[in-house]
Image 1 (cartoon, rainbow, N blue to C red):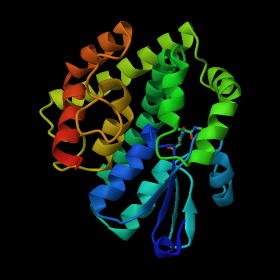
Image 2: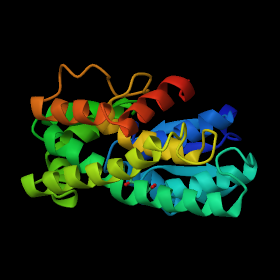
Image 3: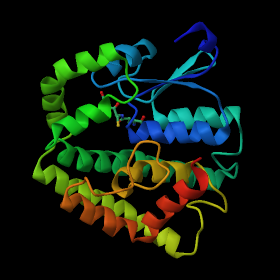
Length: 252
Ligand SMILES: N[C@@H](CCC(=O)N[C@@H](CS)C(=O)NCC(=O)O)C(=O)O
């Protein structure tokens, strides 16, 4: 980080991570200026560990470090209150329950599902991890790549059974959101855009590929047929339409 930026919040990311997109979107929507530093796995750990984290995103802000996307959004809510979360205690409780469901079930499932296919075209993973990283890290990333892919295969259970379980979890979370949208709700909680919409849309974005996403291509031509079938199925649901509308109307 250069001296000109040393007073800005620092967001450490893997550029294409959907948990990082969740935080980036929250910061952008609040108008908070920050510096984003991209890394490729496993080299991100060299940087996140300085702040006590293993995964990305990590946010260093106001002299404090946050190593989980939900903790980050909660802290941002103390800086710019009443934007990301409603003050009403009941709505706030519902927001936290939904956010935990999206973080723990949906985000994990969409990532495992996408990696299952990506691992079959390993160079696409290397290209995705390389976004925004230094030349030196690109070289290290290419050398370490065979080992890195072996690790993610085990870590994310990239087997046929693992992929099928991921698809089931995605459908289950979409069913819950479909029921809410079918009640005529424009947003997932209350009557305005909030952290709940950001979290659902960002973590679902891997399986929806909405327009206006900073990294994912909404054109599906290069994806395997089986992936396209699920994306098209999900896009046609009320929850999928909500993701596309949130990106269209709220991701600038
Ligand atoms: N619960 C965490 C999950 C973050 C997460 O799983 N990040 C992934 C990228 S999508 C990661 O850093 N993986 C690499 C690692 O764990 O070493 C959060 O919400 O921040």
